[in-house]
Length: 360
Image 1 (spheres, helix red, strand yellow):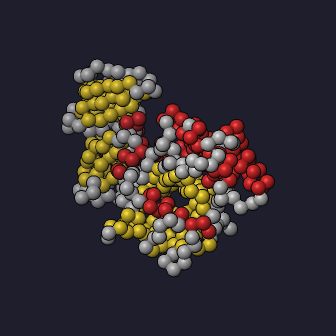
Image 2 (cartoon, helix red, strand yellow):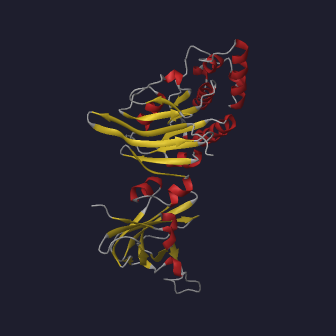
């Protein structure tokens, strides 16, 4: 027997001035899981969140919480009746209330019960010593922890988080994300997180829903969505990519790196072979003629170094390829800074590349 999703969204549509900003979006969040709605600014993800929260009305579609219909074009449960918590990037703490009063705001128990819940959550987020402080006395990271405690205080069935870490200093962000995830998992809270940062989605989500132009174009676990992108744009959203073009003949594409499989693609179709910089490797055995050539890596092709930069944990080397003058980028672990003009042979694993038909 399958568990009922904590949140289920079916075919949400929202238009402004005739333009669909949310176009037939469906998703679900299971109890205790973290789902990330990921996409570039303006793709419709925050509008989707506002409709789920009830602060904006959809044109069509349905929203369910624990199997109960909370909104369609006829029924509409108000935001306060949906048992949904909200957390936004500006934290929205009440400046005239103390930390304890902010966290207790909206709790309906006795004063004693509320105080116990406040102290429990402030302990979890490491803010109990600031219980009597006011927001202006706190750092950004501390305010974020208080905002999280306040959002969790009423024990919402689901917590909606809209870019909650974007206002934090880069040095704090990863620690705050990890602490937040630990608290959410400890509370057993189901989460729908909106972000435009792939690294944040990969770090926090059990599942990612990749959104573009108002639609969810791909869903899956972070590993799967990264390693099996649905199209070139999906691959490029997560990292830099290299692109090599070819034409399919007999389900194969001929390239300077050898033949690549293109199953199911009609003959004569132009395709793009996408490879990430970390999967492009330098063949120091001069074109595979050394002692350990690897057939899976295909045919070596020669390029000339245009630029090399040290990035900390790796080096990024740009090559101008002899076969067509295009630029390919390779990321190499540690320090590797060959001089401009150095010729080197490049190879890449065929099982690490992705072949997509060129869109007309």
